[in-house]
Image (cartoon, rainbow, N blue to C red; front, side):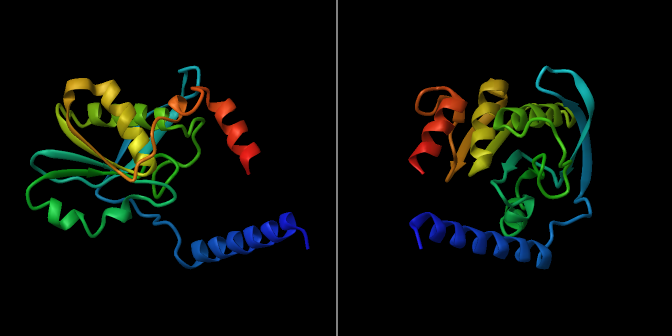
Length: 182
């Protein structure tokens, strides 16, 4: 058996396991504390629909928790009770995850940051501490650029960077080179 066939076999086994896992432990379907709607735009900026973001929030200094992929906001379940003792927490499912709208035209971290800005504006949040984990780190980096002084602190945990700035600065070229490396 060639190396490629072995790799393909292992990949298909892991893919099957992930599908079985999702059948046994499906994403939650009920909203958390609240649903927030923001305009859904295509890549040209044209509003085509609305985007529902599932949100879980409380009172005090505000912390925005941005989860990674492929998980959703429940990854913070153990952390939320402790943080809520002294902070207002905004922990929402990013678009495409959990109970937030799944069918969106742009899944980039920049688009996710745009949606978070709209959500924070809808919630009238003037200042915020941002924590980004994994993919949420890329969203957090874009948020820091977009919100400037509204962000009081930025914490990145095992975070990705801004994909557009990796290697050659071109998303498609970077992915072609990474693909060739495989």
